[in-house]
Length: 356
Length: 164
Ligand SMILES: Nc1nc2c(ncn2[C@@H]2O[C@H](COP(=O)(O)OP(=O)(O)O)[C@@H](O)[C@H]2O)c(=O)[nH]1
Ligand SMILES: [Mg+2]
Image 1 (cartoon, chains in turn brown, green):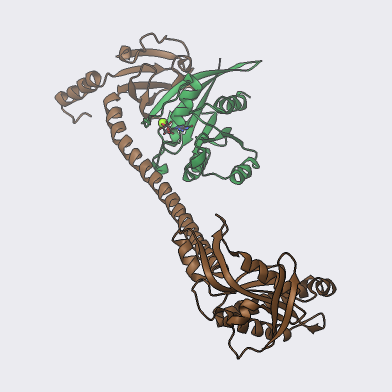
Image 2 (cartoon, helix red, strand yellow):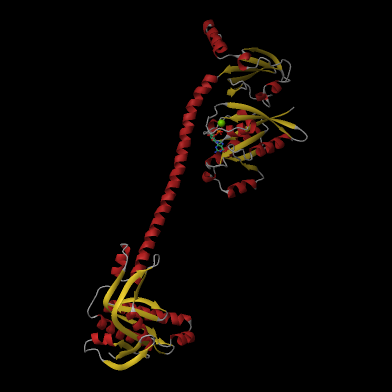
């Protein structure tokens, strides 16, 4: 210090003393205030009492003394009065000097800088968290979109399964569908002795038989340009001349019936060849789609009812056709007349047995 | 007079200052004002047989553990370790700070606070993790300086630990 000129020394002294509001306490070995001075007023500490324990009067001194690592510097302590002080403690023969230097402007400045830095860091952390969340949300969205289009495709293929393709297209286009068709042929076919045989072979075998029968009905309908409309229990309902009109609808359906009977005979049900009763009738019908959530394409009209009754009247393995259908068949179809028969709810009807 | 120095330890912006304000003044502010240096608050906790004055040292929240001034902790008799429950990395910060303090001044009582429990949708600490820490016999609290939930409980618990 001796090499520092007096003028500089005095400037440093004045600077710290005035600009930084220097104040001091001397604390004795019993940790009581021994001496006080400087600008204590600046820190709101002018009432500190000499001879009393320092920790009782200055809370931050609690536990600090005796301090084995003097000198000890605690920067930027906010005092109860709101001022911020740099605190310096240093030893002097068992006593300790405590010096206060105001650091309020430095603290405020540093706080402004640090505030910015921490806010940036917090924003970055938050951004990272949100990005991670966004990513997983996107992932979930993509998955559910995929699921949705899978569902849509499935629904579409189901629609195609139960409806003729041209009808399904019109349905997708949101058209109302109810068409009259002047000339179609309608077929019903069911399994001979289904209930008793099902009981004797059990559910699994029965289901396999039904599956075989319905599949054959589906495949053949594609082959002969017919539409399988629905199944009712063990009964299949099919139509020809729909949804596109064709003049040979009766012949198409007759061929379908013959092939269906053949296909059935190739399978065995309870030890015997699978037998069918088939009935066909031709005439006008109304076709349409009903239902809002589940589409059902169906046919209505007397033609449908009569076809069903003819089928019920058929003998095992017989393809029974109405007179109207018979008149539409060419000479290549061999038929035996059955004469007029009484049908429930209809009266006397002329029918034929289609042989081949 | 029973007077005990307690230090708030934890990463920056975990809620140390907010917890002290909630405990001492029963107020909360959304605004984040980073602490630079040290601020000291005092609050008395009354028990049937005695009253303890807690001298709470709210230290600057350090993002850089290396710059933490362990010497501030001299004379402390207890620690409040604060973790931000929405920022998992702040758990390691609090535990490291405690290790550094104990290396310097020896073991001392502490409570571990998982703060900001009101931010349920951003909560990032699993119950399993908390249970595991509890099994070490640690006093753990899920606090919210915003709602005040469990704040008094935590400080009271620490007060009773340091009073003996
Ligand atoms: N929602 C919520 N915010 C909190 C809670 N505690 C603190 N904060 C907010 O977190 C930020 C940092 O708090 P502060 O007490 O300054 O953290 P410190 O750096 O540890 O002192 C501030 O914006 C507070 O308002 C809490 O329990 N819940
Ligand atoms: Mg703070």
